[in-house]
Image (cartoon, rainbow, N blue to C red; front, side):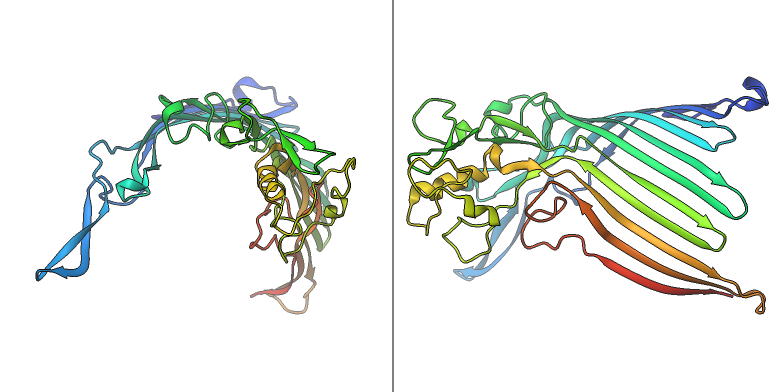
Length: 382
């Protein structure tokens, strides 16, 4: 067994615990716990600093404040726990790893928002909150075939990750009250509850949670979790004599915001084709409200509320052929000591997803989705 300052690992050798002909060829149990700190926000962030204003008054150049003094500034603290089991079977032709972890972060270094009357938008400070990240990670490596002419191996991994806000003293009275909920992930979105299109007016309707007769930020109480439920990849390597094929699929199970352009009918930007299914006449049962040139203020306001409602969050799961590579080693028996490999590679070739309006990984306008890239090459080794 081997031991460290913040962890331990036990490696059971075949000679002492496992018979020579056992199906189990490798076994390792490891665990670790440690505490780390971080101050990666720049130097002297606790000091109040000034700069010259560049203007003179009575012959004296003034000073402008550039940072507020914070005497309670300290390190961020991370406590990390991990337990893992590694096992190999049948002379490691099948290798399986399972790991569980829990990381707790406290005293986070953030920019805490301030009222505009202070002259600063935020101050660098420690947030009195505890955030927990935990999860399970599984990997499986198999050697499916192995002989001098044909080899095939597979690697599979999947991660189930969770995040939650453990504690936040004074959350309800803080500037984060409309963003976080104790016991829920920090990646949640507080949204309006969408109730559909009013068939009489053709306007989007939402749940009036506090029953005050108006739709305001206080009605954004429907919580949607945007943390991926799980993600992973599947990679294969197939080799036949001098020819080798590698390909990788990645997958993510998640929800995300749908693409949202400007008000339909009120701008000259491209609109999703689904906008043809908008409300037109009284009594219509349609998924989208009436289009407007921007003069219908009720429709404009309802559209922006729609973008902040749970109707604007859709299934953005996907499976993507991330990488594929084909290579061939040319036989150069007549030239000693020289190797030549021809290769052809492709990236982001196929994506399978229910997400309709753009790419599920990069949904924001103004950003390119993952580009399809093809590469051909010749590698000479002397």
